[in-house]
Length: 360
Ligand code: SF4
Image 1 (tube, rainbow, N blue to C red):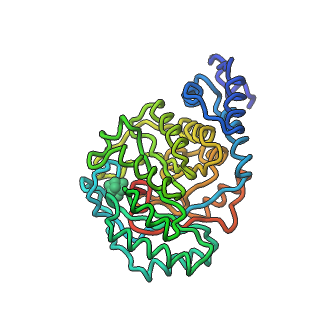
Image 2 (cartoon, helix red, strand yellow):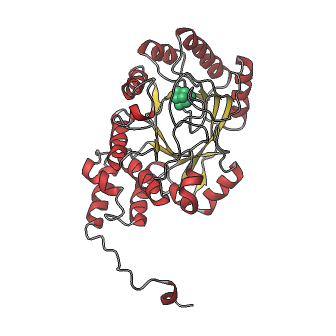
Image 3 (cartoon, rainbow, N blue to C red):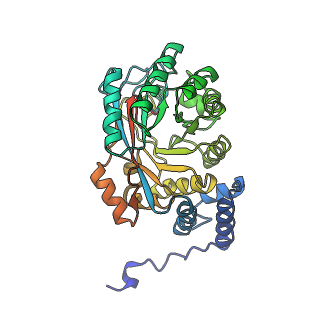
């Protein structure tokens, strides 16, 4: 078979006359830690503006500067599930969800300590405690603070991350005083779309939580879910907002409908678009940990390995209410693509409400 027999000679060759100039500019800006211009950012998401492989190469140059070929693996280990009073429509745990999920109760302190110990012994550098719900009460903040103290004094130098919903300044200060290293709170979707996705709290509440954590001196992890009907300009807005908020870690989830959840199937994502979004976030947030998070297997499909060019972090072993690849397959994917697993570097996410739908 010759090449001519498998190519479509009637298709006009696509030309990208300004691609080289654009890619050189955005790469130079990212390497110099200059903000990405909104107009340039929008063009990265447009297949008519740039060939995908050239964009991946530009993102890889920036990724390699900060992380080499290393890939950080996160493993979710949820211990409670369901019964959330909020109504995030994508979430299987929301009060308006009919999804037949398995429900767990919160583990007690000793169980959580034991899990932190196992993660520490296995080489984890950070342990994440994840709680579903609107946000912690004063009593729950006190409980979390003593838990953080116990984990950090029992298993140094293990870092601790908490994902517990909306947090005020006093709560953030209390957790910082206890030694908390990082707080996760995802923006999930854009300011203008937020009310369509959730009515029990607002986008502004989420931004205020991130500001409270940053103000207390806690590192911030915050990401989004693409594929819930948002426009490319909204994704650009999120990338720029997370840069301004100083997010050190940005999980990018790819929407997967969980049967029974309030938000139905949305046929929006293609593997190419998912990769373009990862590249956009790398170029807008050059030294942040960019994670190809929940739903990558379903939405990136045969192009999954290409996610490692912009992203330096992935989940393995699946998510709370949706399956994913096991660790062995994920590690093989990383090695086959010419990347390496970051040694002594996996992150154990343990606690109630962990997962693509519910990393509140
Ligand atoms: S995302 Fe979090 S706050 Fe929203 S419904 Fe799910 S568990 Fe509750």
